[in-house]
Amino acid sequence: MIYTKNDAEVELMRKAGKLLHEVLDELKTMIQPGVTTLEIDARAEKLIRDAGAIPSFKGYEGFPASICASVDSEVVHGFPNDKPLKEGQIVSIDCGCILNGWQSDSAFTSPVGKVSAECARLIRVTEECFWLGAAQAKAGNRLGDIGWAVQEHAEKHGYGVIRDFCGHGIGREMHEDPGVPNYGKPGRGARLTAGMTIAVEPMIALGTWKVYIAGNDWTAITRDGKPCSHYEHTLLITEGEPEILSYPGAKVGGHVNV
Picture 1 (cartoon, one colour):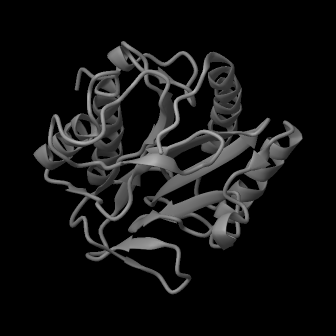
Picture 2 (tube, one colour):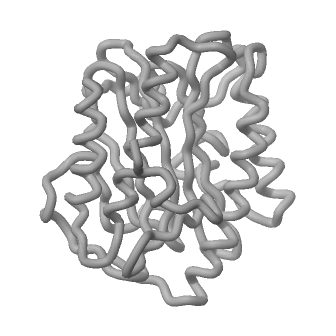
Picture 3 (cartoon, helix red, strand yellow):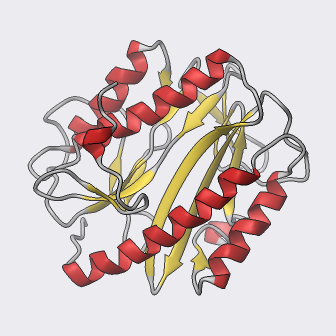
């Protein structure tokens, strides 16, 4: 069942999104050669708990950490570890928090030091995919409009669109209906209505979209071993431009000229 949120509930989600945005902004400053993803995870948990919130991921169906830290060919659900990050890698940080009972979820991919032009381009195009998808996230459109916008832009650049994982509804629970695929056909799928809150999260691979699951039963990895990038925000569907709840003040219209 798809739940729409009233004004009071949306305001609570705004507060959760603002906190998460501040946390991720600080985590971005930590990403450099020599830092471990366990150190980033510890910082994320401290920032979230110090603000009176709860890390959404920690303990979720047994997940062991407050962030997902996915390096290079890891797509999503990477476990933080004590291996120092190396120059030239890329790392995706996915994080969620619960504040006053309401969730926010967001992810970004960052270069570690100087990376290849190929990886820098992958990160940039993945973010562009998000903003193009978000531009379709308005009342009256359908989920397929979002998915197609993401897919068309990624495939235009020769990239693979991950199909095994997708975005989702979000509210009191981290994962609510509907699922929000990063591929699809315009005019297909559930109709979007004002008050819906969803997480749009393109996962775009340099090569194939096909993945396998690592021995930890969580981490997804590209089958060809090529890098993957991930970008996500929580947003509110309105009659016009969506509100990006996990990026206060951001305007979709300022990002879609790609």
